[in-house]
Amino acid sequence: MFRFLRRRLKSSLRDLRSDDAAECARLHALAFAFPWNPEEFEQLILSSSVIADGAFDGDDGQLTGFVLSRMAADESEILTIIVDPALRRRGIAAGLLDRHIDRQARHRIRSLFLEVAEDNEPAITLYRRRGFEQVGRRKAYYRMTLGAPVDALVMRKQLI
Ligand SMILES: CC(C)(COP(=O)(O)OP(=O)(O)OC[C@H]1O[C@@H](n2cnc3c(N)ncnc32)[C@H](O)[C@@H]1OP(=O)(O)O)[C@@H](O)C(=O)NCCC(=O)NCCS
Image 1 (tube, helix red, strand yellow):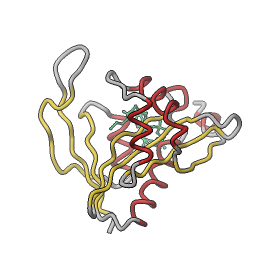
Image 2 (cartoon, helix red, strand yellow):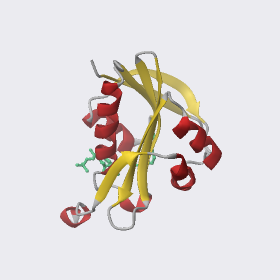
Image 3 (tube, helix red, strand yellow):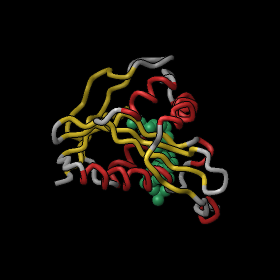
Image 4 (tube, protein in one colour):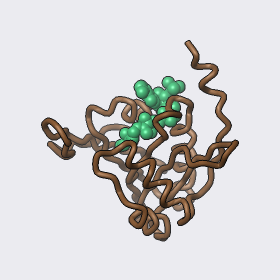
């Protein structure tokens, strides 16, 4: 019912910098059971084969979401995408992915891949809406803190 109000979030997008690493780790820990540490994020952001985009609150400049992918030849794989749990369903991931896909195309990437847990409906819906298609499945790929492991769907978007 309050979708219109939720959408009125001022947000800006830019390449991630190494000094965003601690904030990336903070957001990552909110979403995943096995968080990556700030040093891992710093290495990824500084790598020449990694494309890293962040969304920032238009008022206080705080990181609200980010996406990272690693390129190899003419293919690339999304390593992670996360939006602050308090700010979801406001189009932040959609904006991040659009920018990210544009940047892949400028690096002459032909295919963009990702893996997603088969029970992660928000992410799967986001990816399908952005033109990703399932091209494979990895059985029992994700370890869970509780319960049985979950399959990963392998998805691909052709860029060229
Ligand atoms: C997946 C995730 C990044 C989406 O971020 P978000 O900013 O809330 O997504 P957006 O608001 O940009 O949504 C874009 C579209 O994705 C789909 N979507 C997003 N969240 C959804 C949900 N909870 N249920 C169904 N569809 C959803 C919708 O199609 C949505 O468009 P709409 O709002 O116009 O219907 C976010 O839920 C998240 O950080 N999840 C935890 C981390 C994660 O699972 N990452 C993916 C690992 S592969």
